Each structure stands twice: as C-alpha cells, then as structure tokens.
Length: 443
Image 1: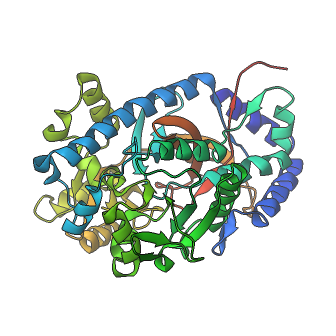
Image 2: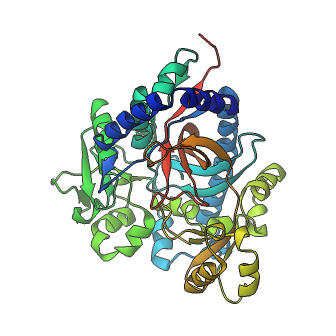
Image 3: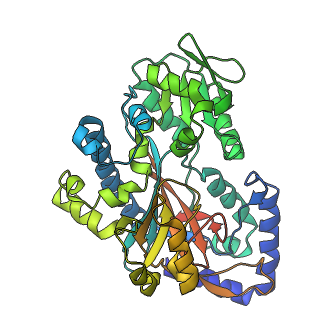
C-alpha cells in the first residue's frame, strides 16, 4: 500500500498541472452524479486507496472473527434475561428486539469501521453500522469518476485493478436470506424503507434498479407513510409488502415512535419479513463497546476472541460526573474522544486533540450525564494525499478509516474515508476515495 501511494504521489508531483485539471473533471462528474443529494456532495482526494491481496485476506479474517463475536452477543441477549439487563434499551425497544425474525441471520448487513495501520496491520474499531449501513453508492460513483483521474489512468497501464461490487451482491444475499424465511412467498414485493428526509435517496434508487433487474418488484417507501390493515403492511402506493429492506436506523424509529406505528405493529405481529430485524440494535448501539470488554461478555468468548476484543475494541465508558474527574480529563484531553451513545454519520463526535483545553472543558461539561460515552482515542494512520479543490493544493497527511462491508457474515468490500483532522466526520471534513484492489501482476 505504501508503494502504491508513493507511485501515485510521484506521478502527481511530476504532472501537477495535468493532475489539477483532471481533478477538476472528477469534481464536476461527482457534482452531477447520484452522490450529490440533500444539498451536499462527496469530496474526494486525488490518490485512491489501493489494497493488495495480503490486506484483503487480512480484512476477511477480521470480519470472520468480529462477526462470530457479534453473533454470540446477539444470541446471548435474545436467550438470557440476565444478560439483557446489562443493556440500556427502553422496554418498548427490548420488546421489538426480542421478536423472532423467522430467517437464518441475526446480523444480515453491517459495516465495520476501523482505523487500520498500513505498516504493521494494527487497528482499532471506530464504530459498527448495522441498520442504515450505507455508502455503497459513493464507492460505486467514485470508482466511475476515477476514470477521469490522470494518475490512475497512467497506473492502469502497470497494474490489474479490481473494484468491489456492492449492489448485486447484496440483492443476492438479501434474497438468499428471504428464502430461509418461514413465511416466504414465491414472488415477494420488496420495500426499501427509511425516513426519506435523511435517507440516501439516490442509493435507494440504485438498489431498486438492481432488485428489479433480478425480477423483484420494488418500491422505495417513506416509513411514516406505511399503513397496516388486517395483518397486512401496505406501501404508500397501496401494495402489500412481503419483505422490507430496512434502512431506517433504530434510534430514528424510537424518536418517531408514534409516526411509525404501522411498521411497529407489523413487526410485533410477525406479518412481514424485515431484513434486518431490530435485534441488530444490540450491535449498533455504542454501549456495545463498553460491555464487550466486561466479564459478562468476555465469558461468552474463546481465549482467542477475548484477546481480539481487548486488542481492538477501544476502552469505553459512560461520560458521567460520578465516574470522572474533570481536571484529569482536561490534563489528558488528547487521549479521549466523546460520542453520543446512539447516533450515526459522525454527529456529535468530539476528539480532544481537535480542541483547546478551554473548549474541551466546555464540551465535557455540556455532554456530562447526557447519554454520551468517552472513549480511548486512537490516532488514525495517516497517508500522503492531495485535495486539488483547495486554493493552494499541496500534499498533506490524511487520517484514514476503512469501512468493511459485511453481508451476512461475508466480507464484501471497503469504503475508504479520510480527513485532515482528528476525527473523520461526514458533517465537516470527510473526504472519500475510490477503493480498489490489485492482483500485483504487472502488465
């Protein structure tokens, strides 16, 4: 990976104006593509993320181990009332989590976001996305846009590059799971369900196209417009729904509880197949990072799995005035990051390294005793890259995060994000780059 980065950097430096012009073409493409929605667009850098088979095999092993651990945790929650008491879920959310989903998976889809060191392969988890796992479309469009990148076109004459396919592979896995559903029908009507105001609309449209290519009639549904009558969940267009691809995150369901009662009742009555079911919240909620390092969870795991958890899950605790001395947190501010217990898209995340001591004090006081966690800050691995949109573009170090897509326990691809700050936030400073892998056989 370091070799690839150096080759791209050297070519850019020796073809700077040409690279700058091609970056403008990439930017224009993205701004007129399906990754421009809700008033924002993906920002990209000029050097993509290139992996070799060695890294890909390593990520596959990480996914296998992690998925096995998470499956044990979910099943323990479902079957052990005492273990269940350790989680912070409301009574009504617990009831939904415990509704059997009637198909052969407790974690159909996820993205495991990790901070990966490209030199020694050490890493820490950043967060786990289950409900609402997204960015397949960003990766898809970035890999189309990169054909306008002069450096990459040059590199293609030297290496055999491959991209990950994240749409058809999910449709196939989704329908394989539906085939195990106890109440399946021969030709199911598929509903892609979310709160449309915040959803990845263009990504939903691409998934709709792929489901329909495979012969499944599909509708993108505003979750608040679903209706439920006589044991049947109806789409806004009035069609009976057989299977739901749930993109609505669980925290939003609880926030809009009264508005989504038709969907909730259908789940409770087990009259519709929901992929993924609400039990994925056990893994999605950041409480997991606290509980997974405690004896009640470690006792469920093998010695190898315990070692994996202690090495790769950052130390995590609730941010409460009873547990922390404010002065100590101020003196060690660069060691900590503060996050909401249940959120997404990097909302409300603060790294001590990004703030002055006084500003960090204000953040701690504002979020103390308010359902926030404080977590060991892991300094992300940085790589050289260049953002040509800047007024005076130059090479700087960017923090890296790899999002490992997981379809029913199988590693399927990577979403690569970077930033020039202490955190990688879609709200502020995030850049995304195309992700490719190479078989290392030179032409």
